[in-house]
Length: 339
Image 1: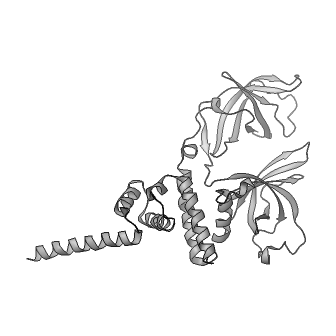
Image 2: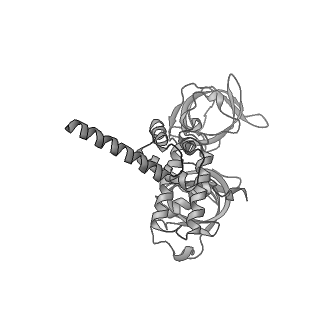
Image 3: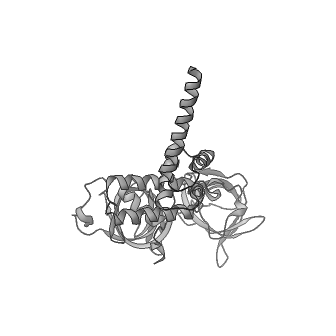
């Protein structure tokens, strides 16, 4: 008798759970299938629950597309932002947290794409004009770029950097090379200088290929190119942010151009020679919003003829609201990068 009672209770609970899912999901979509598909795709129950809410709010005809379609995710994020704006709750703590979790999910789907997961195996795949850094232990680091990538060797521009020791010869020397592959990661490999054509009109080196690339510094966020005016305030990182997006109290900052930006970094062009390790505050505008990012200079590429430096900034963790605003721009949710 007790067994039958337990069976009946189990059936009732199962029925109530199914009804609750149907009611929570809305419409006639088979939400049990949605949850099963989400688990099959590797998502947690919390993530699936979040996406169910997004699917309902945006009245998606095929909610399971959220598990794989970046375009559908972006349209859904846009729909949620518009909804929050209409309800005048966009700046509420609950809405900010909801969008932040949605952007976390969006990033996980993007970073799972092959272009981020599959690394480069050979230098034969490197494009022309790929910038490289050549490290000579005890001497310094030299800038160069690939002029032509051929089957048997690579032709690179003549390295620029510190003065070479007397009697130094490139030909026959083994060199360590580092490069950053766009939307991927940093790589290191060893090569050998095959020929030195210093006397040509455009001096170049021929270097050997490598099929043993070491992948490092894998990208942790999506970064996009831009060309916006900005200001930097050296040594202001960590200080109290100015109110209402005003400039720093110490006067106007140093003008610069923002080259690219992500939630955890940026690259910018300044006049003069930059310095690795310098803390700074970066300020620029996205629409009507003033963006403030504190960070540290992690890399410098100096262009001597132009007397300009490209600074690569590692940014300190942002507030959820500031991060959301930057990601709206990065993922081009409202097509503002095309204006």
